[in-house]
Length: 125
Length: 283
Image (cartoon, rainbow over all chains, first blue to last red; front, side):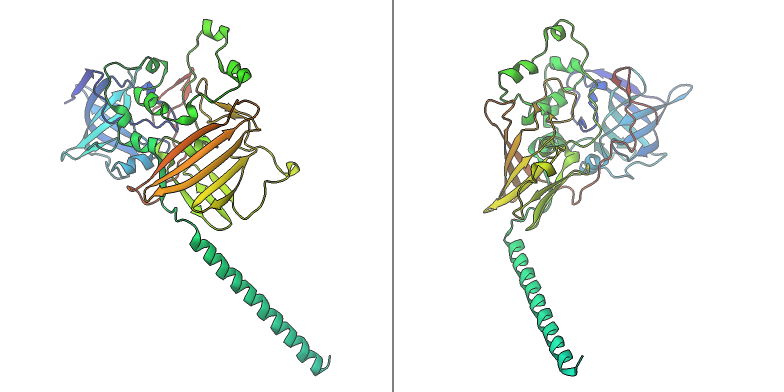
């Protein structure tokens, strides 16, 4: 069952941290958030950016989304580890979507089936 | 050789070795004392901008995105770029003030900004004011030199053994320039020359400050308290400035990680520039 929600708002960007050492995150629309539920195909723990490859089922098919994050050193500092998500894990992610409408976005947060929440920045006190 | 001669030569050799060993031990003891007198700057350090960025300070909601967001940067990026002192306008003389302005042609026919993507080392002086958490750095202090080591492989060597800059015939411009230093108490005073002509950072940002090869950099690096360091940097470019440009860069100790992780923008680059735009490629 696919659940996809798009929210147009200027107030949804709570955890986005860009990695200017490589490229601007201007390709992602920070005024929108998209919630995806799917299955992890792969967590790429790589420089200059980490990625979650997420398989998102819809009625008759499954589409693959590329969820871009920051470098391993930044993700490590905000609580991520190379094994934070493994292939087959069920996960709900919130992203800022690509402006061109294709299946990708920058990570805001990810929650696993047990409710564990990981974000792209250090949670504010 | 008579036995008497052999004994005499052996005695001389033993005495010489003893003197040399004593001198070596004395030098080692002196170096140990010099080492102990130097400040302890161990650990990882990052700019205050990096700390704010990682905590989400620049993500705070605003009623409307800034106009510059339409130029390809996000609100967050505009927020922390505005805090980088090296991205401000330097005290150009009239000639370089004129050259830094957009030409009438540009004004009439604005073009899309270049895709904001970089790959490579940041270079000096920008490496000292990197706003991103990936660039937390380490400082190694020894009597002979102080090393600033960065995750992208950049190593600034600050020679403190009393040497001068190389003679002109032995010196050529590089991305980091040539740095010598000396200690004034617990403050490291650095003098850097022979930095390549060009922008202060290898970012395709319109209007970014541009320095000549004649620029001279004086830094006073000191530790303010257990978790804070500061680099007071003066850039004097007699070719382009009307007066020296003064910056004060503050660093905080990194406490959430105990080692440096290397960065590499080529390992898995999935953001190619296509038709002048940064894209996200499939795996």
